[in-house]
Length: 414
Image 1 (cartoon, rainbow, N blue to C red):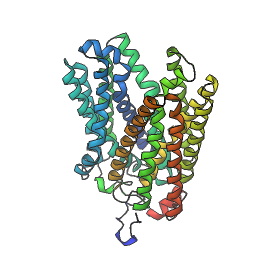
Image 2: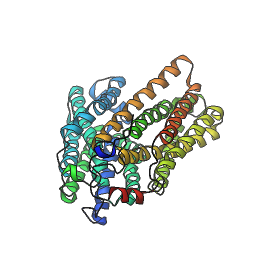
Image 3: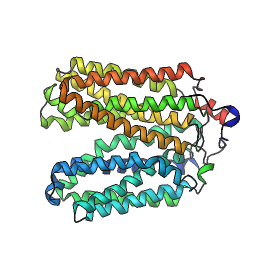
Image 4: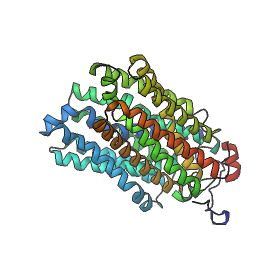
C-alpha cells in the first residue's frame, strides 16, 4: 500500500482552539469513559450472571453464553456500515442516541420475559455499541488540544480497563443480592445519565468539521500496517485471555477459589498501565506501541517457561495485564494520526479488526487446548505477538517518519 499523495489528501480540520473549554471537555470525557465502561460491562455481564440467568429463563448455560457471542458478532458486522450511514450526523446526536438506545434496550433486557426477547434486546444494545465505538474517539478527542489528545485517549480507555475489574464483579454481586434483572436496570439507569450529559454539554458540530475528524498525517500505507498489527495483537492476546482460568488452575496449580483474586490482580495492573501510557502516548506514539509489544512477547514466553511456579505465574499475569492495557489506546491513537479517510471510518475499520482478532485468538486457543493442551497456549500467543511486533517495526521501516510529538502534529495540521 502507498501513502496518500499530498495533492489528494483530504483537508484537515483546523487545529485551532477546541470548541469547548477544558473543564467542559473533561466532564464530557468522564461521561464518555463511563459509557465505555457500561458498554463493556453489559457486553460481558451474562458470563458473570450465567448461573443466575439460566434457571430463571429455563435455558442452559451454553445458551446464555450465546448472548455474548451474538453481541460480538453484531459489533463486528455493523461497525463499518453504521459509520458510513451516520457520517453526516453531528456527533452530539449520535453519541446521545447511542447511550439513550443502550438505556432503553438494556431496560428491555431486564424486563424480557423470554430468552428470545432478551437475545433481541442484546442485539439492539450491540448495534448501539458498534456505532458508539465509531463515533466516541474522534468526537471526544476533537474537544481537546492536539497536544493532549493521546492523554485523553488513554483516559477514555480507562473505562475499558475498569469494566472487567469493577463492572462485571459489581454487576455479579448485585445480581446475587437481588436478581440478575436489577443489574441490567442499574446499567440502563447509568446509560440514561450519560445520554443526558451528552445532550446538555456536547457541542453541535457537523461530523466533518470536528477537530479530530481528519487525521493530521493520513497514510494508507501506515494504516494498512496498523490494521495487520491490530489483528495480530488481539489474536495473540486473546489466545491466552480466553483460557487464562484453565491455565492458572491446570498449569500454575491455583484453585477455582483463587481465580477472582488473580483476575483482579490482572485488571488492577491493567488500570495502572492505562494511567502510565497516558504520560507518554502524545510524545512517543511509535515508541509506546513498540515497547508494549516487546514487553508482551517477553512476558508470554516467561508465562510459558515459568508458569508451573505459582508466584511466577502471578507475576507474569500482572505484567501481561499492565502491558496489554497500553495497547488499545496506543493503536487507537495511531489510527487517529494516520487514517487515510475520515477518522470515523478509520476507527470503524479498526473496531472490526479488533473483533476479528478476538475471534481468531479465542479460536486459536481452543484448537491448541484440544490438540496439544493448555500448556502450549502462552508460547503460541507469544509467537503471534512477535509477528505483530515485526509488522509494527516494518511499518516504521517502510513508511515516511511519523512525527514523534503531538506538537509537531499540531503544526502539520495547522
